[in-house]
Picture 1 (cartoon, each protein chain N blue to C red):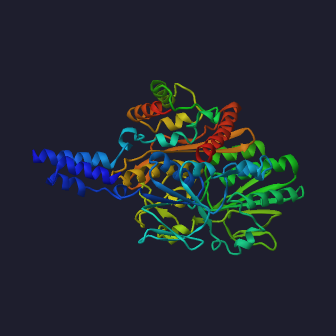
Picture 2 (picture 1 turned 180 degrees about the horizontal axis):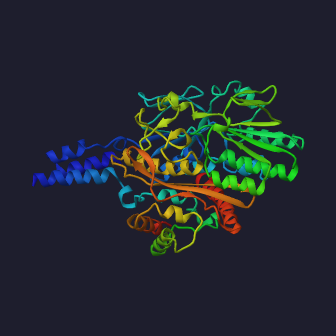
Length: 98
Length: 426
């Protein structure tokens, strides 16, 4: 029981010491996207806005850019730097943004 | 907030050993008061980082130290030199960063005491920090080319920090007679904006072709290769035949000295006397980085590729042009990407966590002519202690594509500038 208490306390301390961050922690790579893809809907850029976009659409686009089946100027070069798992994590995070 | 948590947990666990364990678990600044992060430098790196820190954790006390009330952006400033754009289109303020909760201090930082964790300001006051971010950009090395000091720069502009210098170079080009010689001196690596001198050559050549077609432009280079080289060289042939000449290092292009009195650039192979001389000198990290103990013998700042923490100065992070970011070039895009990764890492560190290994992207557009854009891109991740290229990703625009492709990249260049300046300052 005492051991359980210690474990619980440590777990709680860890959870407490990283408030909110863990749940919404952006996956590797996603911070760079807003260099070109505006996070602000009002920006009026011709470059596709990704925040709030359907995750499957983002995965399909990135996969198509990577294998060359969707033509692109620069996204083909960038998509090749990300694995399927990374793309899925990035897409899920972007889809969850407002 | 920390106190009330502590009491409720004491009540929950009573006086058991478990409670003691929980209380001694690392709970830094967070448990006492909001952690303090000071960011020095309000360019694409520092302004992005200050803003991102407040977005990630609104409780952080974030202070942005930047003496200028207006930021003048370097990307697209070659268009200002060529008369294609006004300097006002390059300028941004810090109101939105302040509105986001960061305190903006309009002073120069004059020193850093890493042991006391304080930053000294020009007025003699100081700021304490738990974590410090340095984003000071570059200092031009006025000790590198004989004869090229700050006074010489008012005769032979570098125009490598946007603002007065940009306008000076533009005025000199406007005042030059048709048939004049323009010389650009480009430094060895590493330096701010690797494709910049060559884009500048293109856009100045565009101005000359349009307004002063008998003129010539020579690039004296301290390198044998440069960014987007084939694409630029193709564009010189296509758009500015007979007008642009590139002299590489091995052809004698390295400028060793200048004479501002006669506007002469001196190499081992001879002298070039120009009507307009644009001397882009070697560079180093902004000097506050040296005060902080964050520079190495190259004059740049070695960093941990996960957190951007200095390898020599604990609790001090360096982002943007001042840091040695491995394969990442010194660009505004890189600085912005690094700023966001660094902000997340700092928030994680301050809350006792371990930052995850990041991935970063860079994309740099250049204009070889109005409506003709080319790009280089890369994806980076920590490998063997530095940020390395992710193999198989990145590269430059293809060599043989329809003109429509170049036009789209020119449009994307413009929309990148609009987006990134809105993300950082808007």
